[in-house]
Image (tube, rainbow, N blue to C red; front, side):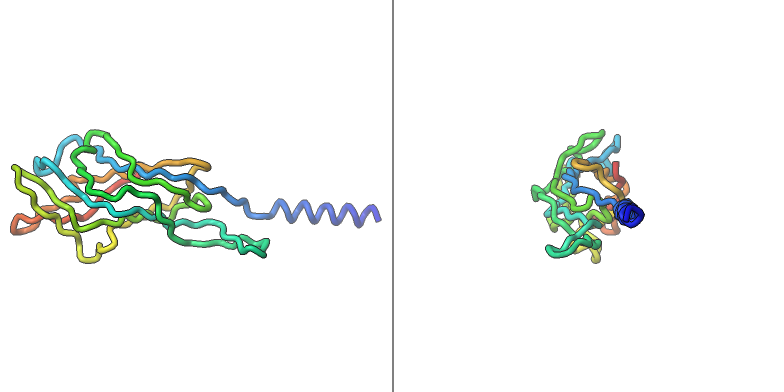
Length: 182
């Protein structure tokens, strides 16, 4: 009887130690910045309309009647203050918090900025629209596979305006986002 009890306890201990470690949710804050020292095209303003930010996450998902949390890859919208942001204000290391919200499971797979059509560059007092690439109707995505700190973490998206803003033939401007995560 004693051997049977020892065997059961050993199996229970082994089973509990083999369970996959679950991570808690993270309250994520997203900041936008541009760490450049010079403004491209001597622009007075570089305006980008951000309508929202969403995170593709990988995390545990539990059915109400299940002991197996499973695994999910899904999107969550962060609370974002929609608006037109002047990237010139973010030069030389200035940052601005643009969104925040909980990320289930604390593992980010991708970040997506949803852009509007009110994007422009102002030079010599003249405002010129910035064209978005045809495949960017939902904004731009940032592949960012990373585990976040629990319970709070923050990411700064360093928007490289000098590489992102391109002059096309005919004096127009196009946006081809280039960025880094800090």
